[in-house]
Image (cartoon, rainbow, N blue to C red):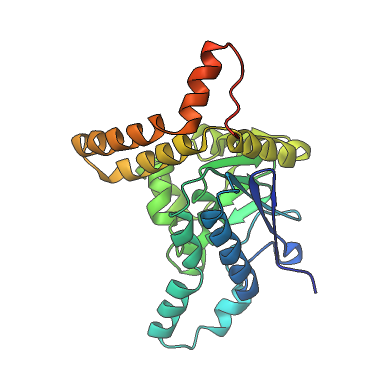
Length: 261
């Protein structure tokens, strides 16, 4: 029996690989447990400077396993809610805490919670065969893992409602046009392109990027004056970092900065 999720740290990039290709990388409990452990390490380990989420097989992620869902149909609502909150929701809650850049490499289909998981990433690099669907409505469910919160913030409310209420697929080119995908590349190039982006981010000024990511996401919920107050503190923290010193020195010496130290 294969390991449902693979994790490694290579040259500053924590690489999480969904590894249930025969099930379309639908997640089960062992996969979720391994995913949580990987995210916790990415969050806590300063050696991890960026994160890459990808999947083995033809498809990125089919979301929750429908066989598991069928077995849960007869359970009381309170048990189902608790399982969701303390089970699958561990992933989005951890993803919202990670202030390091996170890149998703997406091929084939990403549906339901599989799309939700990709939306939690900062960058989505898609293969030209990628297609996504907020498919919950087609089985009588609501978006279970943050999709109804994330999708309007990424593509705008009208387009998000179109996706959420029809459950229709969005193909790669359209996904790039509406801002769902940062870039679309040939399938054969997907892994290399996504990994190159993750390593480029890992080579960057980690303190500045982490504070910038925090400011961007938290700024969605702040008024402008409060944002400026927050960013003044972030600015001082970045200005006192060794990376800022290196950046200024490298600029004056007309060389490429080395933010790794």
